[in-house]
Image (cartoon, rainbow, N blue to C red):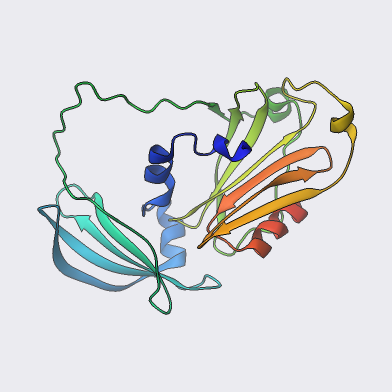
Amino acid sequence: VELLLLHNNRSPFYFRYRDFAIRDRDQFLSNYKFVGYGESVDVAGRMCWEFTIIRSNAPEPRYYSVAVDVITGVVLSYEERTQDHFVISSMEFTSFTTAPALDGVVMHEPRNFETPLQADAFGQLGFEPVYPAQIPLGYELDLETVVTDSNGWKWLKQTYTDGVESLFFLHRQKGTGGEPFSHSTEQSGDVVRILATGPLSAAEGSVGKNSVMVVGKVGKSAILNMIDSAF
């Protein structure tokens, strides 16, 4: 249930985090290589340049075929494949306009209040942040924000990126940020549950007095190493 913090509304979550995008140029250039480019293709009636890109330094190399609109630079289609050509995910625009009619369109409004982490992290959160010492190869910390959920509890959300993919590490300390202490809060005991679907892994659980969530396209062992090294 707590994973809804990340994607209460699936459409904007997928658009922001699932679909191919260069989120950090330097990280992208460090981790990804162009192995094919220059072909002209048509997507949704738009002329695009198609590129083949590989994440070569990952434990399991991944290939991306990406079609970029020549005029706007918008990614209009992509396909992600494994080394043995198994398709992991794909997306393609069926129509595209630079002048959409937005009358009556309801824009996405986040259900969780999210603000940048300030210098006085303890004063903002009510607890000291922790940082994983073991980060998956190629990922670096990109952004830190404070997420206030529907219960009024505060989480520190750390977003890591390899230049394209995003990896989220969220944690909070029980009994802080508006949550009252209880006997269950004071009890210690580590329980972490992990769900893997294709390349995506998600973990949620408790480590001592801390609640933690991790979501990203990394393996189970990488997620457990992050959690173990943080607490």
